[in-house]
Length: 154
Image (cartoon, rainbow, N blue to C red; front, side):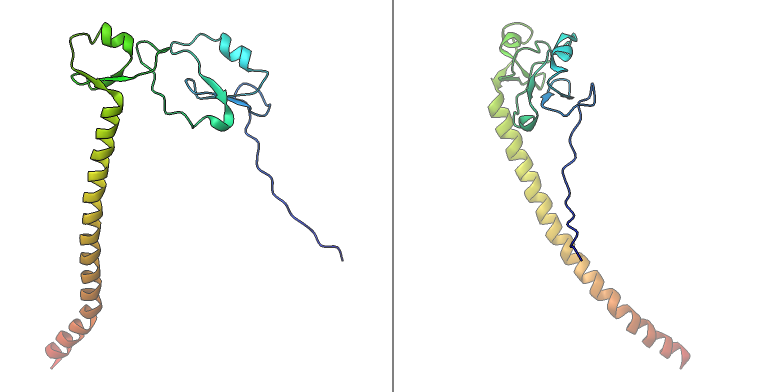
C-alpha cells in the first residue's frame, strides 16, 4: 500500500482589481495590485497620491504623510494642534505655532505607553493576588456553609 502524502500550500493573495496574484501594494490606498493593474491604479486620481511598493515590504515603512500636502513626509509636530506636519506646513499654516521634531513626540509617546504598561502590570499583580485570595475563600465556603447548616440543624 502506497503512503499518501498531504501537503498544504499557501493561498495566493489576489489583486483587488482582477483575479491575478499580487506583486505590489499601494500604501496610501490600501490596495493589492498585480503587475498588469499598476498602470490602471496609478491613473486613478487620488487626493493623497500613491505609494506603490513590493507586496512583501508593504508593512516595512512607518512613514507618515501630511494630510494637507500628501506628497510630503511628516517630520515635525505642531504642539498646539497636536498633529504631525510636513515642512510645508511649518512655513505656512503652523508658522506661529510651537513646533518640535516628530521623532521627539514619538519618543514621548513610547515612554508614556511604557509607563502605562508598567502601571497595568502592577495592577495585574494586585488583581492576581486578590483572585488567588478569593479562590481560597470560595474553596473554604463549602465547609463553612456545612458547619453553619449543622449548627442550625442541631
